[in-house]
Length: 482
Picture 1 (cartoon, rainbow, N blue to C red):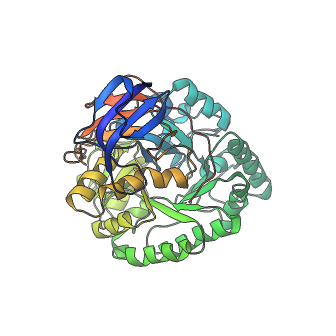
Picture 2 (picture 1 turned 180 degrees about the vertical axis):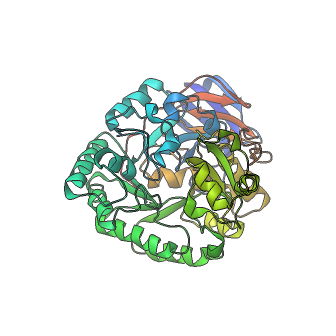
Picture 3 (picture 1 turned 60 degrees about the vertical axis):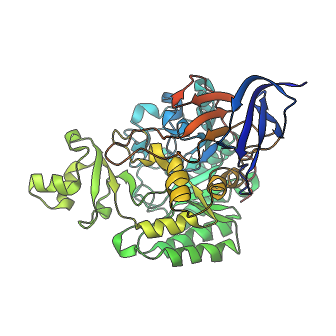
């Protein structure tokens, strides 16, 4: 009778493909899934009864800013407690590597931490640091366009010169050889907004031969969103690379109700080229405090502030009233700062979340002292609120958006499915009780209903507590199958 490390019995297996669940067993040995189905003839060192629970592949958070946290706080409890076993870092044009700073990190690179955490001048040095830290979750990494601009430009409010682009290309090439997933951009931010489309194309043209991917926080998510989407699609076509639009949304009150035409534009592009998107399940976003986003009709909560740290947790309206100034003036006095913007329509968000091309990404900001609740709650919120309660889609579909789809899109080999020979990244949860508990008032709160999480076969989280065992590793790029 064969022996395995772990046998999970009698679970409702949702294998990540989006297909119907089946009741059965999964055997784990040596960090891999060695058998799936009815397998009573195995002896196991550890037996787990999965009765009444769903067993799914570990969730893949495709949009994170955990770049430095996977090293500084390798326990990664905000993600592990949700059932996340892999994080994709380096989004929105900002990455921890490769970076050489001449001073303070430019906005929004400061979301990843202060200057001292940017200590990886090459992508290989970042990979080595991850391997040494051995975080509790797997890490796959994009290279940020803004990070490259920071390394080679004296100022970021202009286009790069041909010589600067050549230097950026050399660094990107080094990172791709070291296993980077591809390139991300954050063209909405002032640190990259001056970059013309051609500058981005000059970099993304390196991706095709490597089987890499391009993700983008587009130039705008407000009134000009269709033009911004067309720019992203154009970059993909010019470079012959897959495109992922980050945190797709219709931001700003004037933009509400446009999700139908936005998704139509996505579908038209998908018919001609490999395109996808990710979305978080909240009607509010979070980033640094941007004067361009100050709108007195929108509730804006300050999450951190360098000149006035005592204002964290207050709304911009409250602060402006206490200072007897307009909100725009208050925002100027608060910078640099972080903010949560309640500027998204719930109806638009749900429509985008439901679209078959949409993956789930938290976009959580782990260095915020008062983070958006998506940092701790994204994945159980999709499962509990939007699948079980509101029935936007079956739970098997929700899981596919978190597992099989992102693994194929980002080229994460042997991940995202419960399949013999695949890596044993698994989450066992109660489908009747799984839910997010993090709120805008109390955002640091783990999910309920997550029973157990395995990362590369290591039982890392059980019954609301980290086991202290960390099985994560760096995941180098394979070819995307978007």
